Image (cartoon, rainbow, N blue to C red; front, side, top):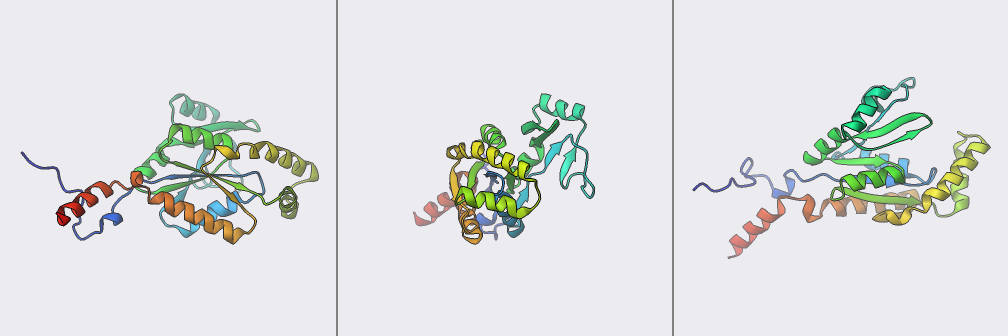
Length: 226
């Protein structure tokens, strides 16, 4: 009777912790202006093993946008077919356009040991976590004060006063979902908040369930020690 192949048989010189691990999904949410986009994109830029989730949408491409870089652009019929076939981790309709996360590329990344970053609202984070509970890590970014959040939105100089009022009203509703998350970071200082995000990311990567090399590695240790 032949024994099962050694889990590191392809490269006996590799350290087991350098072999393929299970990826994770980083779901980062915040009210508009609290910093989730800046923090999440910084993490993606600084860690080679992480990729940014790319959504599908029915809205037309804007100047400079490319298929598969900013979005996967779909017709409404194509998008609805993806919904019907269960090919989306999450989706929603915003301003008469459909947006959603294709499941295939995300799950392929996880299986290959790559981590996926989601810059996502609370509804989308809830849907993704429901479909992939063991792979998801939910992080909520809070502003240090309401005045600070308002100041940041005004400092952008991108929206009218009416739009800013609407964004603040929406943010007040969104913040009520903070307790659905695994971690909460108060973004008073960007560098400190980013350091906290890195600590969370590194700790989550070390969980046993995301490192399938651990059981045979421990067994080898016990064999050597026996």
